[in-house]
Amino acid sequence: MTDKERADQLAAENAKLKADLASSTDAVGTAVKADRDRRTAIMALEEAKGREPLAEHLFDTGSTVEQAKATLAVSPKAAAAEDEEVEFQPHRMNAQGLNRTPAGSKSNDKQTAKAVLTASVDRFNKRR
Image 1 (cartoon, rainbow, N blue to C red):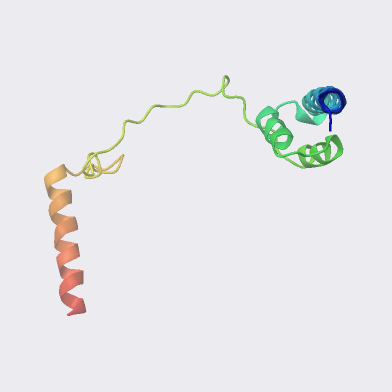
Image 2: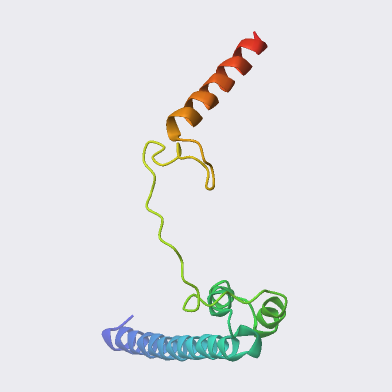
């Protein structure tokens, strides 16, 4: 094989690779556009209103628009977080706050604790 033949062969191979690359790039662009369109269609569904996190999850897992619509139609809407006031309860450490007298109880804490402890000991002793 001469240098000219080798150069022609490499040029033809290079042209083919460039065409394959352009074709692949177009295919990727088309796939990305189709995926974005699918997301837009899922999020625009009437059934997605109030269920946006679920709709986003359905998109992420690859559901079609029809599958997402069917799933969203049977799913309950999420409660509006802005409308609710959630009372903050700090984390209990070492059972803190668990030894309180029930609301409405008239007895003091020491009497209640003694009665509870006595009842517990009596139950334990009866089991033996």
